[in-house]
Image 1 (cartoon, rainbow, N blue to C red):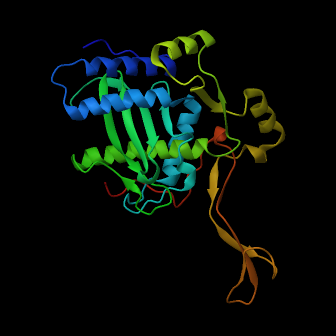
Image 2: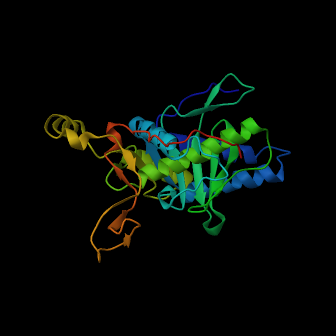
Length: 286
């Protein structure tokens, strides 16, 4: 097997995956299932938006995973609308992201490929230059027990696929919070044009996702306005005292009027992600 090499950018990663899938299609005896999967991946790459996630944003998405999902039974998880994909077909990659198969010693670089199939839900695949696409599972938004996975495999494998699927959901939840991140172009203009010529990608497909707070701004905030440097944390919905006639109010048993405040995110993940006391750890397997 060719020596494993880490891609330097998501452009290189996408090109190597495309070439690997095209090579796979030339193999004799390839099953119809694997052929259809390879063809589907190649078609998806041409319509895909690619997101190269910075290391800091990746670490924050791990914190979002802990806050949103860990400890909860997978058959009772409800994924809110913030877990939607930024575009109908997305690829997410961060330098150093890899996967290890239990029968192998090597760690293989990989990328998440996710597609929104409308009423069918959002489906997540692992793709890499070193193996064919691997279906991980899917999820539907705002449906209790909306996390679904392939029915085959042992419990450990099902659990692993659930974690991969929810990792994409947590990353989307972070990217869909307004004002946290910024998106810049990936690579040079020449690299992008060369990729478009060779792989037929969309012209504006490449995005690098970083924090919208630069080092100079961080330093100023930390010295002048420490309250704004709070880590990202979730405030649960709660009642607060109100007056009759206010929006979204109710009169409770004590005779006073209260207004319901919906849950909301506060702080900024550039300063960390605070795990709520009620946050989960993965429970039942799919």
